[in-house]
Image (cartoon, rainbow, N blue to C red; front, side, top):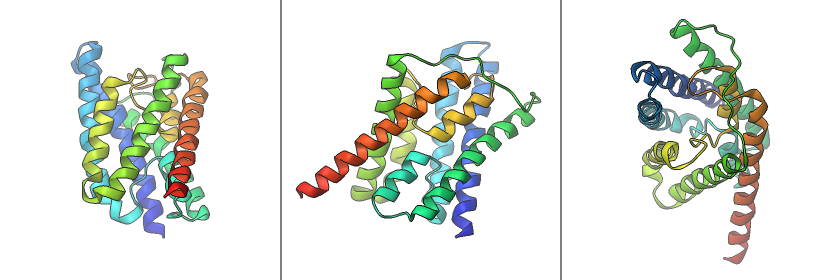
Length: 216
């Protein structure tokens, strides 16, 4: 049991370290070119996510995401108590990952983002991103379980580019990124909109899944 909790904590921490660190590196090496920064950020995130899922999946399922854990709870594959502990591990791990990144790059450890990410288009983007991510995981588990790590990694990499919100699709990530005033940051005042859209999408997905099961 503790192995699964540690896996979720460390996995989410490493994921945020990859996201934030590659964002800082991409922006620095790209000399402020946002396209170059996003390219480096998306490739590093997808590659890192693949490794984390392959290595930690056998221990905890490699959720690293509260809405993914919520989906598996709804499917009856995760007990309520474990779901709640996973959430704590994911949220605390995500914030730790941001702090570790700041430490690595010699930045102030405690920060507050000033990067605005708000508006109807952004919220629709996060809703769609979350629906896409949950669908890929659910269908992948059912039809191509051995390919789920690659499917998720490629989906996230592509999502950086085809969505206006850059595919957060993760409440823990959304909250943690408000603690960094770097390329990947999000203003604290905009976090609620992101998380609301993500949870709304998760509710839609679970309702549709239940309806499909009843029709079979």
